[in-house]
Structures are given as C-alpha cells and as structure tokens.
Length: 208
Image (cartoon, rainbow, N blue to C red; front, side, top):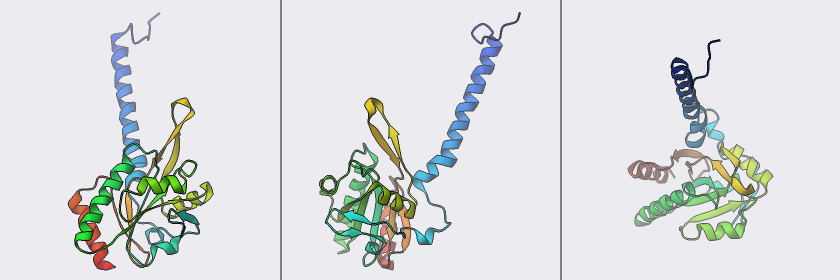
C-alpha cells in the first residue's frame, strides 16, 4: 500500500512543507490585520467620545481620576504596568524627553500612566515607578474600574499566563493626547519618530 508518511515520500514532504509555510503566512496576516491594529491604532468610529465614561480611578497624588480630570490642561494618557519589561519604560523615557523639550518653551504637559494590572500595581508602587519623570502621575483602581477605563479609552489589555504560575500583560502601546477641554486630540505611536512626536505635541499646545 502507498504510504503518505512525509518522511518516506519526498513529494509528500514538499507538500507538507508548503502547506506549513502557508499556515505560518496566514497567522502572520491575521496578526498584522487583526491584532496589531489594536495595539497601535484607533479607528475613527466614535473617536470623539474617547476617554469619556463613568470610571472612578485613583491617582498616586491621592486625587480622583475621572473623565473630568482631563479638562483644564493638555494631557497625555497611556496604559501600562510596572512589571512591563520594555514598552512602558521606553514610553516613560520618551515622555521625559518631551517634558525637557516643552520646559525649554515654558510649556507643561500632564501625563498619566493608567495601570492595566491593578492586582499588582498599588498607588504606592505606581508612585515610585513614575517618580523619575516630571509631570507623570500614576493611576490605579479596582479591576472593575480599570476595565471601565480601558473601554472608555478603547485600550486593548489582556492577561497572559507565563511559566511558574506568573503572568504578564499585553496592552496597547500608544500615548493618547487630549486638549485642555478634555477632548481627544490625537495619538503618538510607540517608538514614534521623534520629529513627528514633537510636531504632535506642538500642535496640541497651540490648540490648547
């Protein structure tokens, strides 16, 4: 009887390899079009309501963080967590650079890091985590309120189990910009070209 074992039939082996490559390519396409956009971009649908919701969070300075907090001054909002290995420290470093540039122009930008990991990120832990960057305030709350906030800001966040019973978090990596009226103004993508990021901030300040 003819065998279909790819190890014993060279033609079957070639077919098997080709189908494997097709499957890998399809996974890559699915990631690019379905998952990646959730991490870096926002669609235009309902964008005017971004940041608006009934979430009740707590900032590391002891104040409440609600949709009203975004009013009064230009603001930058991003989501992350203190156990983040690379994205969050990099974003904080970018914000530190933005603050230096703005200080030279005597302009101020409020920045808020809202945790996607309220189970581990208490107010004290967040306060220490952001303390080295001027103008950045940490924000935490109950899991229920954080879930409300991620929906209001249309942020993707998901707990991912790791070895040893631990976990990490997948989350959107962009910085959201809001004008002094609390309206969504635009975004700065993760590892955005510095010149483009500065241009976005200059336009935000001019509009506010």
